[in-house]
Length: 246
View 1 (cartoon, rainbow, N blue to C red):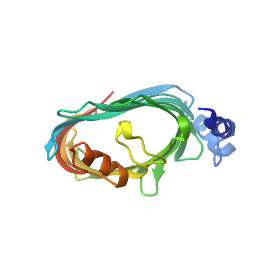
View 2 (cartoon, rainbow, N blue to C red; view 1 turned 180 degrees about the vertical axis):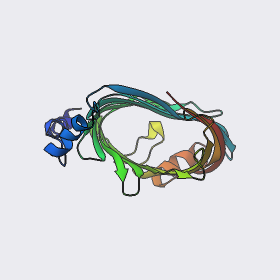
View 3 (cartoon, rainbow, N blue to C red; view 1 turned 90 degrees about the horizontal axis):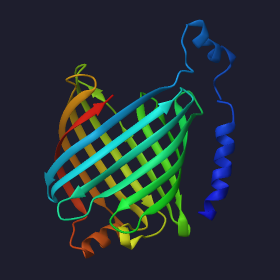
View 4 (cartoon, rainbow, N blue to C red; view 1 turned 90 degrees about the vertical axis):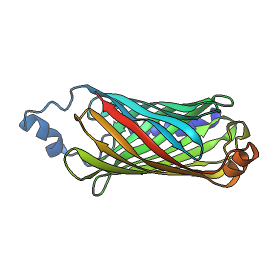
């Protein structure tokens, strides 16, 4: 990880700077309104826990996160992965320090670990997470690993409310890698694109079953690596699951 040292130093300096766009009036507002914005709070979100069926037979997936901290600084834990019948499960886990840098945007710095098929990989993670105009949640993260490995991820989603309880959520996610990793079936360049849509019904705000569809496509070297092992690079899954938080 020696190549990551300059990145760590630069990000540490950024996270130490005062939050721009929050002047004295904005910082005094919580006191005027009797709010305690320095209180530490936490949340655990199991955003996706699902099973799917389609061209790749039975498939399962999870996507969970938890955070604890104040409005300005938080510790984030993220975990996601999937498994396809007949193949080992794949997962990635992240530990991140999150700091507000703008009114609607946070910078995140930490570590990512990839587990499952092939050797375990470790990465330094640097990302932005926040709300784009019209309330679209966006995530963009850069990863730097050992042996000159680099990667990037972009993710976007949005909730469309039919009612206060019936919600449609489309999601887009894509991954890129700076070099191929044959042992983990990852090729250099644009690795994959995932498009999904989930229709959920919130029985309670904390519990929402859903169903939908998820399409995934591998590209370039990643697609060739999958084909060489007898797997298709294009798949469509019908999915059902639940979203739970507390």
